[in-house]
Image 1: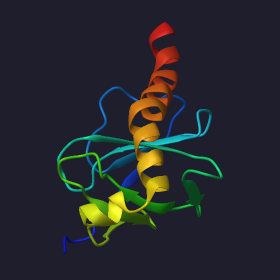
Image 2: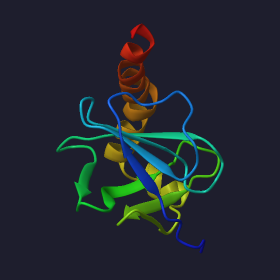
Image 3: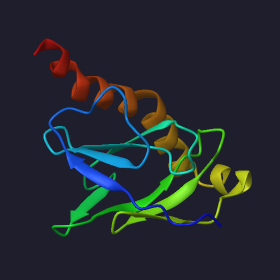
Length: 130
């Protein structure tokens, strides 16, 4: 298991184009959190905030996201929690566990193909106009 990483957080209106490792960018305006994958592979992770997606807790000092981050579509297939601004590694899921739950697969496909691109475009679009 990997050592927990401590993340910094930054509340922003727009998600920046280049996301450095170890920083959570939080856009309340677009209900979106962005960071690079906790494994260090450099892939961008976008988590939409809503009652049916991720929930964010800010206690004045640290950030917690719920539920866990499962990067099933990434080559690394990393799986972790962000609790109190720390990455806490979770067990990897086997392929049969992912394929056994059609709701997860449907959400993953929708999230990866539509939601992520739409939210990322929306959150960065106006920054270029300014």
